[in-house]
Image (cartoon, rainbow, N blue to C red; front, side, top):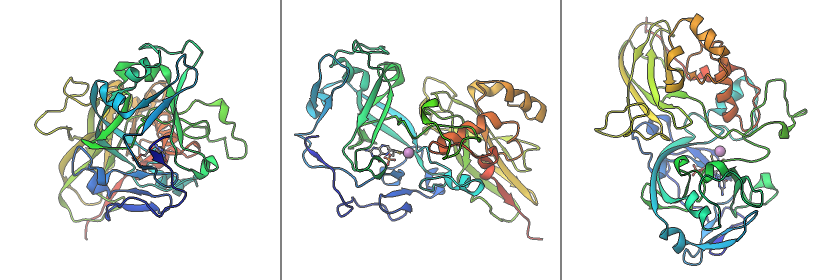
Amino acid sequence: MPGLTAPSDYAEEPPRHPALKINSKEPFNAEPHRSALVASYITPVDFFYKRNHGPIPKVDDLARYSVSITGLVNKAIQLPMADIWALPKYSVTATLQCAGNRRTAMSKVRKVRGVGWDISALGNATWGGAKLCDVLELVGIPKLSSVTSLGGKHVEFVSVDKCKEEQGGPYTASIPLKQAADPDADVLLAYEMNGELTDILNQGFFTQKDYKMFPPSVDWDNINWSTRRPQMDFPVQSAICTLEDVDVIKEGKARISGYALSGGGRGIERVDISVDGGKTWVEACRYQKNNVPYVSDGPESDKWAWVLFEATLDIPPNAEIVAKATNAAAVAVMNKSDKSLKSCRQAPDFSYASDVTKFHKAGELALSKCFAISLHAHCCCPAEVMGKNIWKFESDD
Ligand SMILES: Nc1nc2c(c(=O)[nH]1)N[C@H]1C(S)=C(S)[C@@H](COP(=O)(O)O)O[C@H]1N2
Ligand SMILES: [Mo]
C-alpha cells in the first residue's frame, strides 16, 4: 500500500498512556482501568483500548497513500486520500468492543486461548469518515447490493501489518456486502477518531478462524470452523466499572456506575441494580450525552454506542451488587421471577445478559452468545462466566 509501511519489529511503536493496563507488550495490547472507562461518554483516544496483532503500521506519506479496491468488481481502482476526503463526511458515535473482552474471567472457568482482558476492551468514540456504501459506488456497486455483478458477497479489509497468526501476513477482516452497501448500517471508512486524524480504516471484524462461537462439545481437537458463521454483533451486556470484582466496603451509600451495550443498534431500555443478589431491584439512570436525556431508540440517542448508567444506593450488610441491562427487544420478559426468565430461555432470539450469577441458568441461551464473542472463536464456557462481574460487600462486624 503506497505511503504506508509495516515495520518488522517493535522499535518504532507510538507512545502510549502510562495509565493503560498492559496485557501483552509485543504486540501491544492494553486497556484502561475500569473506573477510567466511565469517566466520560466519549472515550479519549489515549484511553481507548489498544489491540494489535503485530507492530503498528506507519503512515509515511498521507499524500501518497491510497486504498486499492479490487476483487469481484468490474472496475478495480486506487483511491487516494484526497478522493476519500472529497466524499460526503459522516460522523458516527459507536462503541467498538474486542471479541476478547472479559476473557480473563472466562479463563477462570475454562482455559481459553488469547490475550487476557478485563472488562475494558471496549471504548466509545465519534468516528468521522466516508460511508463505505459511497466508496463502493465508485467501483460500480450500487447501494443496497448484497452481491456484485461478478458474484462478490463480502467486503474484505486488508491491512499491511505483519501478524503472527497470519504467518507474517497482514491482518484482514470482512463484513457482508449487504451491510457494507447499506447506508443505514452506518459503516464508515473512517479517517477521524474524536476529531483527530486516524489510520484506522476499517470497522467490523470477520475471519474464517476467529470470532466464531461453538457449543461446549467442541474443542480445539474436533473444531470444524467452516460449520459456523462469524459473530458480527454482540448481545446486550452490562458491567459495573466503579467497583472491583470483589470489594469489601463499609455499609452506607455507594455510587454504582458502568456501561450497558445492546448490540444490533438497539437501545438499552432499562438498567436495574440489586444490592441483595437479585432479590430486589432499583432502576439506575441511563445517559449518553450531557444535557440530552437518554431515550432508548430515540432520535437523539446514539444507536451504535454504549449507554452509561448510575445509581447511588444504600449498601446493607453482606450486600451482593448486581447490574442487569435489558434492551428494547427483551423488555417484556425481563421481570424478575425465575419462572418468567425460564420461559424467555426458550425464545430463540432472546437477547439478555446481565451481571447476575443467580440468573445465569435462566439467561443461559443469550449468555452463551456473550461468551462466544468474548471467546475469540471458541465458546466452551458455561454461562456462569458472565456472572463474574458481581460484587460482594461485607460489613465490618
Ligand atoms: N490492521 C489491523 N486492524 C485491526 C487489528 C490489527 O491487529 N491490525 N486488530 C483488530 C481487533 S481484534 C480489534 S479489537 C480492533 C482494535 O482496535 P483498537 O486497537 O483501535 O482498539 O482492531 C481490529 N483491526
Ligand atoms: Mo478484537
